[in-house]
Length: 158
View 1 (cartoon, helix red, strand yellow):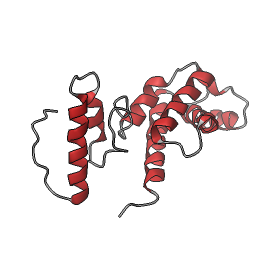
View 2 (view 1 turned 90 degrees about the vertical axis):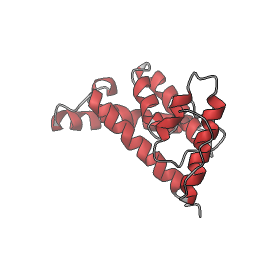
View 3 (view 1 turned 135 degrees about the horizontal axis):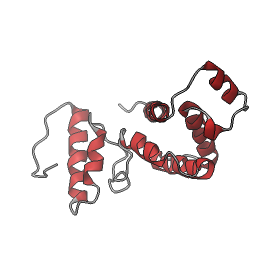
View 4 (view 1 turned 180 degrees about the vertical axis):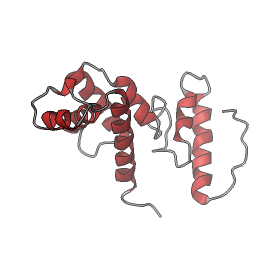
């Protein structure tokens, strides 16, 4: 049975990963700065990572089409970061989305998202001539994971 809230749960997980990544690069120096940033007394570019993340988040929401896919949402967040911060956090945004299976290879795979325990497997196919075979292998793993059974080895070396 498909859980109707699954996409939202994945979206929140991606966003919390991104917030953590942004904060790891630009930690908060303290409560006074956090409050000044929240009140708009400091420009977002000079604020801690969580303020920069939420700015990219809100800006991307304006850019997203209705009924957006995770890939469109990712692309909107990348565009928002370029528009607001000159692309300063592109690497973190790519990393955060890739951690949940929505990295550079995600467009090449025909299934919506991996259900296996290691979505970073998708990024193993980047630049490979057999990327389609890798995607197919991951789809098989995902299907068997959903059925809670052991997949047969199909000869694709990851």
